[in-house]
Length: 471
Image 1: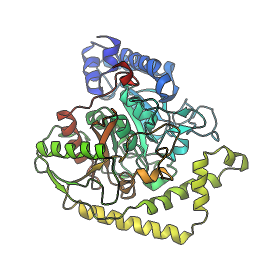
Image 2 (image 1 turned 180 degrees about the vertical axis):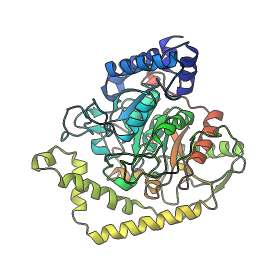
Image 3 (image 1 turned 135 degrees about the horizontal axis):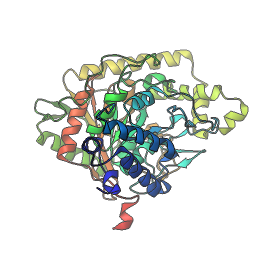
Image 4 (image 1 turned 45 degrees about the horizontal axis):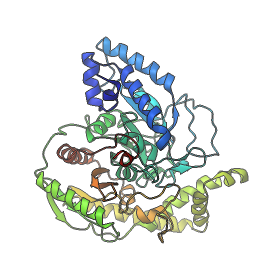
């Protein structure tokens, strides 16, 4: 078994090898570190790598497997954390010049759970400043590039995690999603990404827009996402919004068929403009789900674009960041974040109250819709990846990222689970993803449908950055 082979394996395959003694967690960790060494310069996915700490953790894991006492099925599996997540011993810059370079002194809940499960922490992945936009670039570490074409964005804000997942620079990658920050980069990079029901994957300190954000996995397949959620999807008292009631096994009966599943397929939610090739790939995916036994009904959930609702909440979060900075700090912030904050300065408390009321009505509408349809299917993103270091496609008449992320933030507003599933490529060779969203606490149903699709139609993943260069 070569290091390259180990570097391409999922968590289940690695666990089988660890148990049999055919490979060790140290070998798997070194294989992941080797892939980081080979590919990270091209894509800038990782902003911090803890080689010594990872190898030490892998050696401890190897001893446990050797004694037949692994801490969990992901003991020894290489993992990454988004650089908005505090990890003891690693700096958490959050993509901002306003944050210190000193290592952190505590673990956030997902890190604590992963450590308790024996996962090997490789390092931190890139994010825009405080995760404020759906592309990944910042003034500290620069831009992360799309592994399919390094001239283009991987999306964001978990763009570093998505690029790392696509190139298997580690196996399990933690992201966070407040407006599409897991699903958008998953679609742009051609990997699987899951935003769980709000409150089922605890986080602390709170996200900048607390009631929109869910911690979740970016992986190459839903099975690995379920394995990761079995660890990070557990109640933690630190998070005041954390909820109980998570499934005992997020991957229970994952290999079931889709007969009896009723999916509402909305090509544009009634208001979005979608690239023709993306629309075609998603329509093909709907037919494939039907072939797998699902009932597909083309219908819109029946709500208008919630962009104004989302902006009221999102820009106000930027205003809080801005207001907490002194004059020097304000000058260091991303100009786009500052623009959002300055816009929010003109809104009243009544404006915010109206936005919250409209959010409640949207949630009610979607939860009611899910009484008739088990899942809602849409494109994940309506456009192809575009040039790095831009918030919107150059030459478009768009002003900010919310205008091209119309499919993702409705489900942040409703706090419902949603995922992005790869479903082919455009003529330019760029990935396309479709989204499945469910009612609150229907996370396992979402995972089962995603698993069935990806088992029948495995994703094609890049072997190297910019694979088109190699024919």
